[in-house]
Amino acid sequence: MAEGNNRYGMTVPLAGSLADHREVFRELVELGYTDAWSAEANDTDGLTPLALAAAWAPELRLGTAILPVFTRGPALLAQSAAALASAAPGRFLLGIGSSSDVIVGRWNGIPFEDPYRRVRDTVRFLRVALTGQKVTEDYDTFSVSGFRLGRVPEQQPPILVAALREGMLRLAGREGDGAIINWLSAADVERVAGIVASEGPGKEVVARIFVCPSDDRDQVLAGGRFAMAAYLNVPVYRAFHEWMGRGELLGEHWEQWAAGDRKGALEKIPDKVVDDLIVHGTPDECRAHIQRYVDAGVTCPALAVMPLTGGDVRQAVRDLAPVD
Image (cartoon, rainbow, N blue to C red):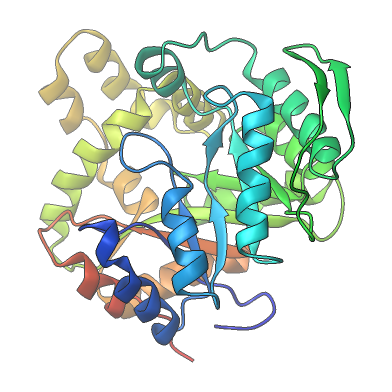
């Protein structure tokens, strides 16, 4: 999986010091991974690992999945994107999104207001700003007066939009170059990717896929429930899974969680939901499951290893490597 649409990505950084990641990035290349995708929640920021990868592994395509549009001002976000695009010409994709009320509001102290329009306005601003044009514009959610980017990238980075439900998916396809999707099953992809594709041809669909290469299903189910609960109870993710038809499956879980019975709520997450949203089993079974995402419309799987059974993450990355 190395050419054309046969992309195969890994979420970075892995565990350990960033100073030691030269070896990690070089091994990703040797193993056949084509992409490195960062995240930005409560670990590293989304840019530093990619800056290191740009220098240490110029063979890799690099992407942010995602940078929140609320936590950087528009000008700083444009500067950040331009810097990575300059460090990795033609190899950088800018993934942006609203993030969540937890990350934006509780952790960063920024009002999480009107996320759809904030993302839309940010895409529109970046489209102009990254070309080096001077921007003076009153958008619905912010205003920019007289900003001109001082270092214009030779190649414009594609802009991908993190999307869950229909409105943001249509925005990703209509004004973005594609979507970044997250915490969904392979069976969900056809519906989600179809909405993106309906807005125009050639759109990228990057899926963060959570993977635990282990055949200890009991441990995966227990650890998976704990990991998933943090997302399932964020309002935007709850709304997404209700939209995808999981309201009845997860109803008892949400009721007990809201009542404060966290332990009991975990037990109410059905096995099926864990099996659908977390790829697990032997490495070959995992690769076959990941392929189902691709067959349904994902253009680049971005694996995120979950050491739910206590395994070595570096070894899991090796075990999950693409097979020609």
